[in-house]
Length: 522
Image 1: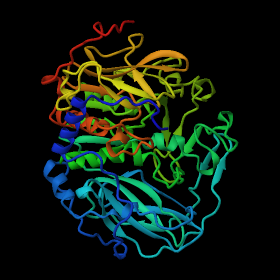
Image 2: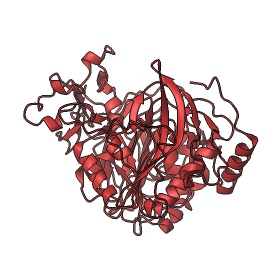
Image 3: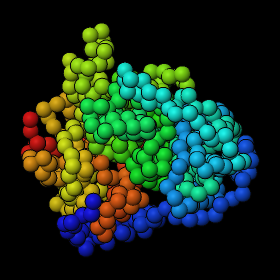
């Protein structure tokens, strides 16, 4: 949605933000739309891949991004809509694990190319592997479980197996191309053996899957588009259906990947399912970043993140409406933790009588309410909105180098969902509201708050307060940005990354509680 009322930034702010962007070498770049297409290298062949030893570290990040990039990952070949669909049998792996791809294609043969996403001098990806022609692409109709309205393609047979020896940890896309159509993508996270010393980016695959309507059913609606016919459980054993298979990765995650690797930070990549399965995943991590759309969380995910924060790991939420939906994860015939259950109305959940704490009400509801504010510091409010972000605390370290002053606006970046500090629910203190942006949602006046808090472990917590943030980093939001906004958002995000990457932020930047000054009371 285009911004219809975008007041300009002051000349001072515009000059400062643009200068900051130029100093960093950031802002304004968009992905190339065409590029070279390398010849197929054959199954198992890597093209210049470096080993994962030393990962994560700043040196490893820099060495990887010094490799030549390949903009072909974004080339939109073919004139017709894709008649491809594919899925992988893992959400994440460690280097060396084999990955099976299940491909359905009406216009075979299909070629599969694996790209690691990063910076790579602005090309934002490096090609690491290309398959020979794949012709085994005829698949049966998916199955349907009427009890939970779950669509599954677990009855498909694997079309190829991808070896990953020597692959560098990171976020990857498999790009599938048939004879005539547009490409299809399958995401894969390659995680490092450890996150110690790293900035950890969490791919929100449970949220991707919740919105996935492949086969006609998501956690939101059935084939007739009605909420009442929605699925109660969704399977990872099926393709993501969002336009081209890449789901939320494009706008809500990939821009952050590019920035972190451009800055040369020690970075580790995980999925939220990894966070669920491993209580030691975050041992020694410097910071954990939840990205632009991270709504669906299990109890184990919450527990493991809170334990990390309380041990000194910084946590940041670069979206809104995080930790809102309560899910359970269980096994499918393909593997563990590949079925995601959320009845949304917990009274419908069969476990309510036997295990009420695991009944899938919204986290803030039910017999055992546990609102997201315990971790995020802020509380989801409403949607849709589209308005300006207003600076409240320009002296904060987060605004260093931006030139922003109290009352300055960043036009059009609040929405469509937003969070605010609400003392009617559990809220960490001290907490510092950095932007306090008036708005109206559903006919009610409210505010969106960017907030920063610290806890006794000295860890910092951060909530950006809007779902339009990560996409601004690469101008990928689908509506025009006012001059200077991308540079300001990039500078603020860079400040956050660099401070959080240094260790517990409360040691150098304890939160200065300012709620009383802003009139925020219970």
